[in-house]
Length: 402
Image (cartoon, rainbow, N blue to C red; front, top):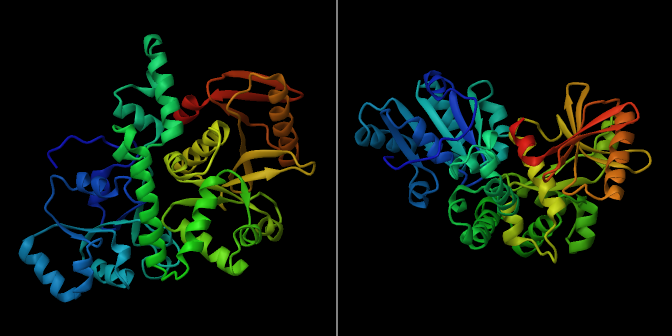
């Protein structure tokens, strides 16, 4: 812990979190720095540590014995750090018991269902959540010692290179300083998530079908998909199998499925969902592609940034298609109110492209009764007037600073 680390950007007061008796739950994909964040929180504290990624620990698990050993190894500890605790069967019941005993707990986990079916039962109201993702663009700039929100004129060229680098290669901490390792490292990490966090956890027998589905999704990121389509395209055994495998692949925060907004819930559930990847680096490492897909890479980056800003799929974040089949990439909702419509277009220098994007955005704005309209581009910044609408065109770096 004496090594230098990049402090992640967030609005949380870590000391205040530690003073709370509630469970501190740090969630997110594997290898994004959850354990490091927990250790940095506890760096000057007296804490005990258990790593549930250790097979030897899980194989000999006995709760009473483990607690006695912890007292011997870490006498008088004030905090207990449980790393990747979702690997322990019945972890939620054991954690709930520790909470009742007055243990001050910090937990990391790489499974999205920890917050739904599993934690909703015995730990509701007993935890505070800290969500972590790969480095944001701002954190990537921090790592490269360049302030994203205060770029000087002589730094513009370097900033442009970093923005493009981030869009293509993502922000996984392990490779931000070694870009030549992006493909090999993320290729291995992707496969490890499929095998360890999905196939092994759910006892998937047909791993070939699971892997084929994962490869199809990463190659078709930002496109609409449905269980019926996937079953037909990949020759899966049933639509239920496709749905089940899609859920499995979301659990380790690998893929997200964005619903198409409709004020009728039944119709919304029937519509295809757009698939997004947690980090653009996985696309570079795994996707089968014959082009750079810059437009889709930018769209995927915007999606992850919206997740980072606190928008939730199924609750406050959607895409929309008008009655005339015009599409807007992101609908941001607050309660019953449409807060903002966001369109993504890498390059709007062509008048034809601009006309297409603006007309789609305006038509959807009319149907959704929203006047806050944004188009995110690679580096274009201006304002477009269309009818009674005013559209803010902003570059991706400014969008990430909002």
